[in-house]
Structures are given as structure tokens and as C-alpha cells.
Length: 83
Picture 1 (cartoon, rainbow, N blue to C red):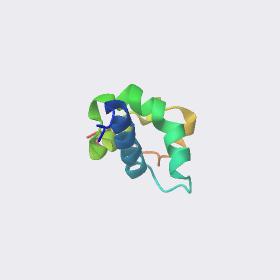
Picture 2: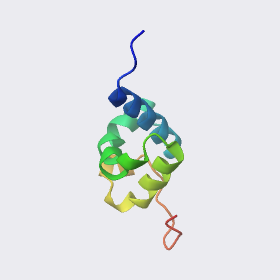
Picture 3: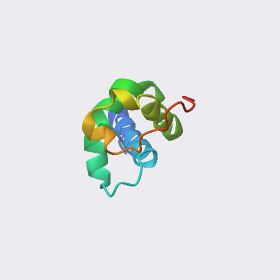
Picture 4: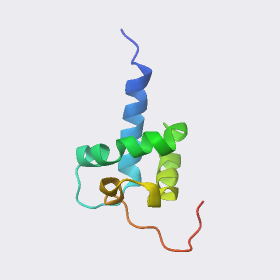
């Protein structure tokens, strides 16, 4: 049996993390992944595969996310904790 490639494992973990991190906005899993994959790898690659850390990282970088990815998240409250 072949071992899964690390890149595929990271992508799978990222997808799970993004799905858990995003607000329920009626978007499909594919739409969420497409909208945020680049941002997640850019800002949060070091957090993969920990879905809780990916979620926290994406929320910390909310203001820097691409518009399509921002649309997948609820805007964090102003003045709230960044942790």
C-alpha cells in the first residue's frame, strides 16, 4: 500500500480546518476551500494540520484575507482579544 503524499495530507487537513473555522454562510465545502486555500497557506501554513490553530490564525488575519475568503467568516468583534 502506498503512503499518502505529505502535500495531500496537508491539503486535507487544511480543508478540515477551514471548514471548522468558517461561519455557516451557506457555502459548500468546495466553495470555502476555493475561497480560502491561498490565504490559509499564506498566513497559517505553520498551523496545519491543527484545525483549532488554523481557525484562530485565520481569525487573527481577518483584515488581511482576500475578499472571497472574508465572505466565508463572520467579522470578529472590534477590540476583541486576538488570542
